[in-house]
Image 1: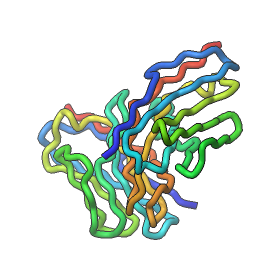
Image 2: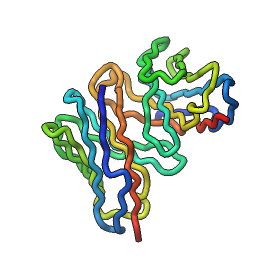
Image 3: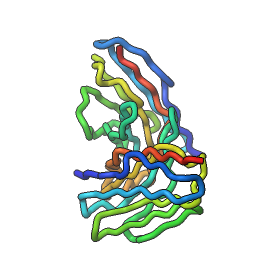
Image 4: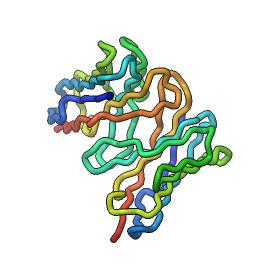
Length: 113
Length: 114
């Protein structure tokens, strides 16, 4: 199986500053690490992901870093805006016939004006 | 483009009553399908997955069952609801072949058990 720890559970940052969320995993066979954003009452939406053959990936203001030795990956949101306020979930998956995604407990990101 | 539909949008049910939730995916042949449960304010827990018609694997036992009667349909059910079944049920899909494929969630069904 897999266990994913996610911290912090609540993150408050000033608008236009950066926000960072950290996750660790246990299974060294895990090779896929997606990040989901969930707004209140909505379904989770995939915002960025990284696979084990990469250490860094950026999509506009979203950066994901992966440290396989430390079994750690992180999401960094640069130049935060009020629309970034939401729950964020990290997840990890080991390869197989279907993806057995294990999610972290989530981070409530609050962007303060 | 792929579309994923879940029904009903919301349900209020009595403890001990039966339940059936549905999910259909259009525009994708032989997808992998998944059921997730999310308690209010909680994380996402994968319940079942299916890589083909008629085959369903259980990830977590929550007194629920799942079936895949058609390539594009996934059903979650129980004969007897518990209070602990309340929450948000999400269906998801990924491309066949599975390994490290993105999973995309449906709109979800909000279940309240009283």
